[in-house]
Image (cartoon, rainbow, N blue to C red):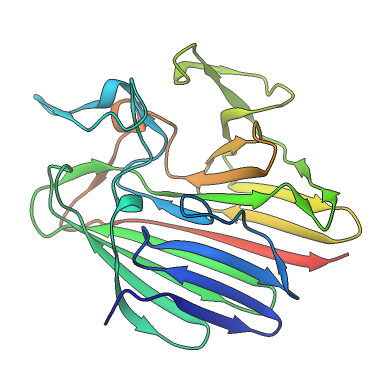
Length: 262
């Protein structure tokens, strides 16, 4: 199938999926109100085969050191798939299945599958990475840009993490876990019982971002948008907390955004 834009509908919710632009969600409208920041680099993109920054673009797999392009010098950031065209495998009125085959500069072969499923009150994203050849470390996650204001109403962020990853001057975790600090944030937090973050636009909408994963990056340093990014490990996790994709064990994660009108 082609990688043309896809529109999913359920009730009064409508999602635009852009296979040709990194497999991202280009828009999510509820009752005609757009929840995601608009623009070619925004919406919500999948982070794969790693999330956040890799220190100096280098990661080790056994004795081999691999180097990724420094697309956020001095680091590599957010994976390779957001810059690629994905293929559309299947589409119905309320669900799309996309695939992306890992390729250069990533040194391992594998396939990423993303399922985008819309209901009248929720969007669920599921992603998996599988390989039939060499095993390799990987991470997966999502990077949504939620509009900071809806019809002039500013967002409030509420969550209760168990810890915050201390962030060094290089924007990467130092390895120390600290008590959560007040924002603004560009920080990774640990939620061992699963990611659970509530965004509230008072008298407009409440949106809960949940995931079984225990890591979430919250970014609210921009005026236009806030980001709540569930992921399978912390930034630089290919080096510090690698998850292995093997021919017998794919890596899979899911996040759900569920909204309620206020």
